Image (cartoon, rainbow, N blue to C red; front, side, top):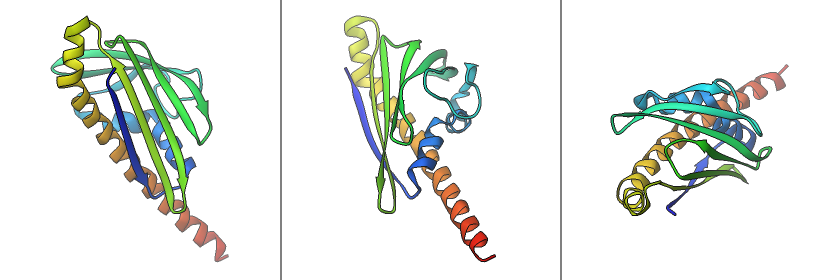
Length: 164
């Protein structure tokens, strides 16, 4: 099965990164060019353990629906979303958050398998792996920008409050 492994350094505390990665609203924003939006389950805010979201989007000129469920979660450490229904034979996305001295390393392990036997294997290798990695990198860039901006805001608020 194809696997995409990414590490993204974010100059923000783990809790901010963890929540940014669980944000339905931020995910929608990161996938605007694919007209992706949440149509069922948790459709706004933060998704939590045992909750589902159904996404509708356009990829390769075709409409797709994907329903995922958060199957595992340890607050501020990791969470896993797995496909319940959708275009893949199997999909699992593990998100981990490693605290660093000056921020967080966000880790993605995205493993998937297409249906259709050997045709699916060819699609996975020659098209989907690169395509999905590009989507994850795009999403992670927005998570990074948002979390770092939020961390600066919190830091400035804390400095401001300490002067009183």
